[in-house]
Image (cartoon, rainbow, N blue to C red; front, side, top):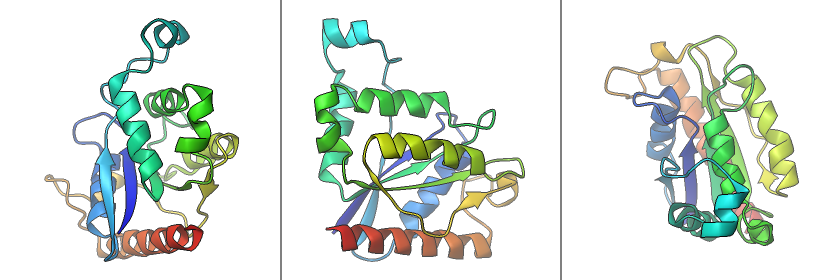
Length: 185
């Protein structure tokens, strides 16, 4: 079984990115699964906290889950033409201490998709993640991009994906990412 850890870049209830992540988890091909993870309990990164108290338990647990998984999927909103600070904070914690970066991130297949209510489709946020992926020595998957514009029009009030064309794109994206992960193993 190919396991992908999926993380939404938004903490908002009713987040379109969380809805997109849920759709991706439902549309993953047979023989793979997406385990949705949360960083809601991560504090703001502070080196003094790390030094005085160590790595918080929720951070350590998510690091272990990522290290054991075949791949990592980030579903990112775009805030002010960049990545969301809360998700970047989570990644910053996940890289501490630095000696854990190889175990958690190096060589790890990673993919990014995103949704926004605007027309830009998270293109700038997705691009902003590339230097981070490079720094962590991940293996980014550059399949067909998945950038959802005007997200309020493609999900219903319960969070279900209602746009059939987008459903097909998500399914193809996930199939391609799973194939990439399997080829890397």
